[in-house]
Length: 487
Image (tube, rainbow, N blue to C red; front, side, top):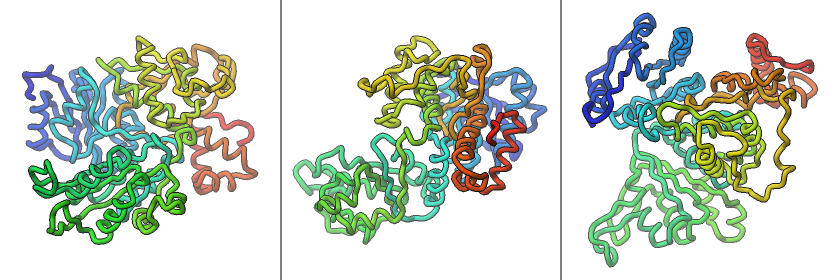
């Protein structure tokens, strides 16, 4: 695609570290993007008037993005911000999304096609950049643990209910690992007949069976140097479990119908929603395979147990439907219902609910009337009555515009904070995701303080040091948040 085939988009590139190189400029030209480069905030002030999109190269922190966002607000501009970060700096990507970046791309993803996907949000359909949400404290802990596991080459077993996001976590493990530039290959072991799984995993030689007109590399070979993800491994037939065990032990395989041994360099990540220990007792799963794949176990909690992820996930899902730059808004009442629903179908069900809401809304505001949950038999007691406007409601739930919550990393942010709201006008005042994120931490901290006898116990319950707890409370006082009398 060249500039003549699309509407030309004017991008301003802020890079205080080094000039843009010829390869990056060529990729922008191929994506139909007109580029203006600046290196200081002073130059940026003038360039912003002409910008359709702003691109910032970040180093070891997201501090520059914070300065730019402040400048944009002071100038009264609204411009989407993309960030480029080193793939090893995932914490910077997390901070960038928390501060409102529309997309975060690593240097490895920085290509003409990635650029086309990123700018499609300005004048075309859905983006193709990867998207993850780790906002709730439980999810943040899981992300931190996954990043540590990713640096080793051990096999990992992801355990959790269907639809909770096991493949998302598998991709995080891959992208945070030294194998990130190599392939990530996934197979759902429950989705195919036994004979097809064997062929897909191990491949075949030409003439191995009727219809094998040429050799076929299986998924293990395709993942060479990278990661293979075996989803729902508990559904794998017993005879294939034996073959898989041999491959994992020897790091070698033979294609179907072949004699040559092929060396493998892969990392294996498996996932299941079954109790594999029970399956072992019932002779449905091999114990030796279990210990081979479960060097490190990571458990993904159901969505209902990580409520801080719910609204950001809704925002992320709605952002995929944004066209022409007009964001969706979720009313406070709708957010209360979304956070109160038990989500038996987890993230997959949430995405279904969001898609229905988009269809039913006919506009850009999602209200309770547009929410159709899968569990139609849920009685009224399962959903709380809508609180009055004078009741205590989360300040963070003032109609949240979600365009800035587009695909990438959300964090760090626990669930949304409760604070008294005096008037409907104050309740309806829009806030950004960053404000919601900062405000939300109070609820988790206060819940821990109120359920324990001392700050020391509260800090232990939160998994932080007493000093960190004091620091966070001091930050909240500075931001004007009300800790309440019990704090």
